Length: 141
Image (tube, rainbow, N blue to C red):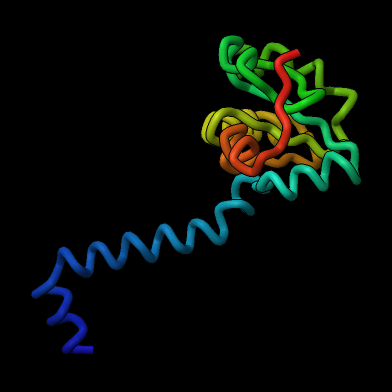
């Protein structure tokens, strides 16, 4: 124990970096439980859509959505998400997959959905960019 403390005092930057990595690792394992929603990669999202009739919600802005979006997705920009939450009430017990360009903004929408009592909420990890990278279809209609 004495050597451990001596090492930390001599190499505080290295020890601090190690502690930061440890905290991030622990958060990545328990973070999903704390957030209340799960991440779904494009393959998992496809299975949810095909097997469980999941609803896809796209929270990107209008100009991004018009460049291409997942087929049959509902478009509710994040800036209006709380105001338009009632549009999703009929899907409260259905799986809902929320996507944006990279999966960052959609996390905010997932948190709003969980707080509103939606049961099965998924964040499309990597967003529409990951969907497109996996050669899955987008539409401009």
